[in-house]
Figure 1 (spheres, rainbow, N blue to C red):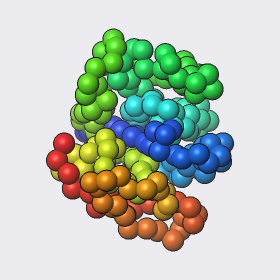
Figure 2 (cartoon, rainbow, N blue to C red):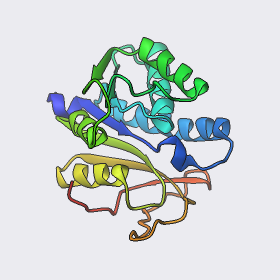
Figure 3 (cartoon, helix red, strand yellow):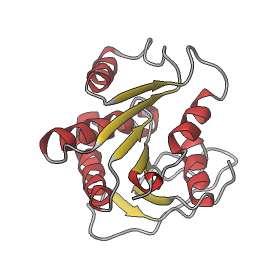
Length: 202
C-alpha cells in the first residue's frame, strides 16, 4: 500500500461556526457521523489520521479516532497537527481540558511553530494534507473561509474528499455564496454527506 493512500486528513468546523446550540448534542450527533466515515476509510486502507485540533469538531473527531483505536483498530494512529505551541493557551477551560486529554493519547503531536502569525492555520492545513490520500471534512453551508479552501485544494490535488455537512448553516457572509453538497437520505435530517462542489485554488 502506498503511504499516501494510508493517510487521512481530518478538517472540521470550528466552535464559533457551530452556532449557539447545545454543544453536547453537536458532539454526539456530529461525532457519530464522523465515526461512521472513519470506519469507512479504515476499511478502505487508511490508518494514519491527521487532525488540526481547533476548538469544535476537530477535537470531537480526534476523540472518535482515539476511541476506535483503543477499542477496535489498534493499528490506526492519531497525529495531532497544531498551528502553534500556544494554540490553546486562551481557550475556555472545558475546551482546553478536552484538547489536552486528546493530546495525551495521541500517537504524535506536531507543532508547526511556536506562536501565532498570519497564515499559520493555512500552513498547518497544508502540512497535514501533504501525502494524504483522503480528506474528511465537517462543513457548514458557507462557501468562504479556510475550511472551504482546504476542501478545494484537496480536490484540485486529486485527494478523495468526504464531506459531512450541516444542512442548516449560519448566514452567508457578504461576498460569498452558499455552496450546497449533494445529500444522502441515509443520514439524519440535521446532517448530510456528499461530495464538495467547491473548486477553489488555495
